[in-house]
Length: 158
Image (cartoon, rainbow, N blue to C red; front, side):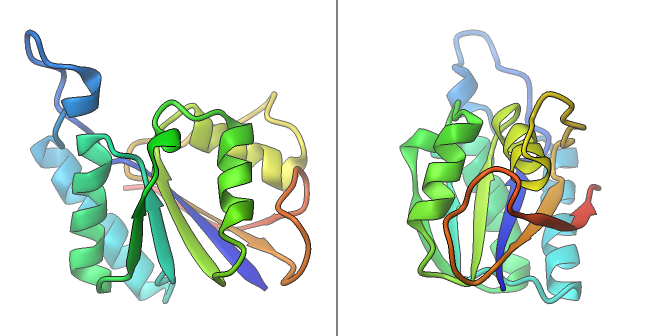
């Protein structure tokens, strides 16, 4: 069994005048949410083998807070996660089939749509992923990552 852990970045500060969305830092609440997500992952023994994350500041800060609690793992920055579609995220997860437990850290609406698509085969009725939330999807050991092949084995939010 392989697992895909989807982690949405925690709450970020609103963009300051002249600041891009890309450069928004975590808010104090977001920092607490990211630490709570790390504690939950550790308590559930859901330590990833590899973390693939968006280059946006808030995702990098979320990952840093999570890994400070769970322990550091292999990390790969992936530009395509920022503003990714569900299709882009599925292709990315499929490209990392060499690990048993992959953490993808990014943004909505892509994450909530890929969770729905992988679990139910459709993203038309996705339920949402609040900031700092975690969805864990389980797959058969062999075979591609594609719509409808996963089981949603856990969902947590701060």
